[in-house]
Image (tube, rainbow, N blue to C red; front, side, top):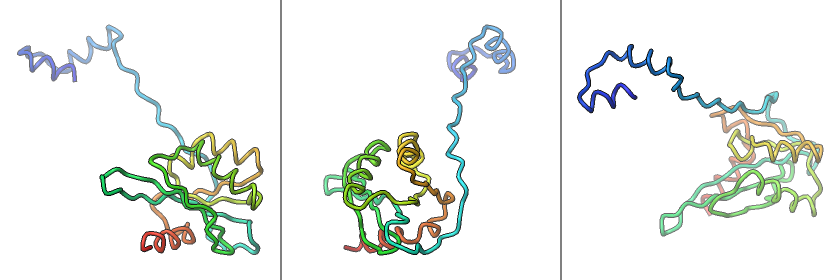
Length: 162
């Protein structure tokens, strides 16, 4: 990038020389470290044996007539297929997801397992800490495989139609 800026100013210098001098001067920009996802075991989609054992969560995106995007957090009990919540907001963070789950748990209790995709709201530290504190196991599906979270994807398809 520096080499390109020098060329734009009319200086014709070998790019290897620019690289060498740049690093000798200690001007190198540190690379940002990539955040690693949570290490979880991936298990097949099984039908739960009783209500409130497994919940599935996902986001549905939509747009208002003004063009502004909205997010809908949907949560379904996998055994009863009951919709536990549909929360609509312009943006929902991981901390807000934990608050929503706490409000559901006031009436239903905490599930044994929550199945989600690997979105940033579901892989954040806040949700991981919440799950640990309440004894809830988080199961993340493989990236690009929505069929592993079929219960919520089926619900979201009907939700979009309505």
